[in-house]
Length: 379
Image (cartoon, rainbow, N blue to C red; front, side, top):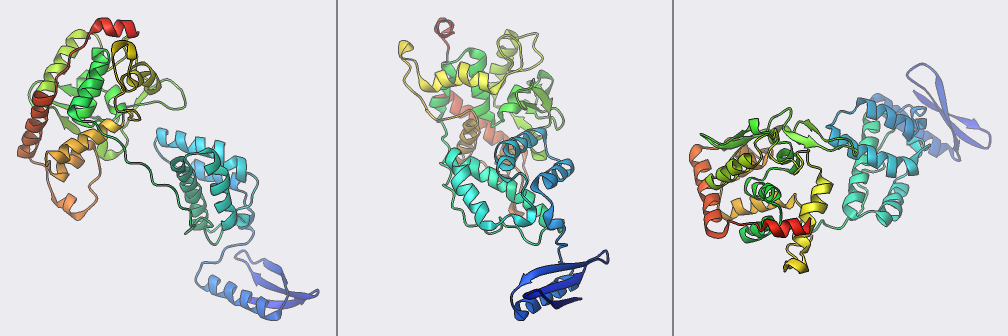
């Protein structure tokens, strides 16, 4: 029950909280305004949507600590969350009570603060995390509504990612040391992620009957977290744990690669036998290949393309070759989201046709060779 009283020169609303204490809201200038608020309080209490106003004083710092201790995501995802919290969210909102966060202030923070120093894609990621955290505060009844909900912020669309033709993939690989080049070829012809390839062990690489690479659900990917030493862990999602079948040419290339590196536990370590680091590979092998080298007569090739775009390349090739969607989803480790996906099934004949098409690409447009003297000069 809620009621109104004269208070000073105006009116106040009073009501009993769940623990029996009486709370007052002061500052209403008219009896009508106070009465409306009292009716709202009673309605919210009946519908069990009432928010204890004392909880609105919880600071964003306190709530983030509690939210963080209860949240469970993969280490790589948490590393990104932690960076957003430390770098962008807490520096601006620290000390603010949850109930004092206003929609217009959130909009100004995104448009004037985040977008002044971040690309729209990054600003969107930070905003989505903030909205998630505040949304869970609503679910916990710390505040009555989410100031981020339906906030109109128009972010620029992300540009379409590039992909490469078979010839372009071969050219990129040919500009690298053979081991690095084969890493690129394998990524383009399988769609495996960077971490799935650099964490790949020979024990999960089956090159005899039914050639395939198995992405292990517990140790199927290499993770680089906060600059620490790379470690093995689970792949990105549950559906990422999968078998990726190999065309014959790639089996032969991997067999030759194993002969060149007979003592290695991992399929694609560095030339010194260490675990790969993404940033080092990018500077050492990837950027020189895409940027070109005038001394070697290399023109720029696919500038702006990153290693992950080789996954886009594999998907594009599979679509060009009319590979069924259900097989494309399985090969790339994507979740089946529609009813059609769940009622479709991968068959051996689908896999055989796909491998024949990938083999045909290699035989018609593929194949490459390296001039090791050139690579020694570059290094």
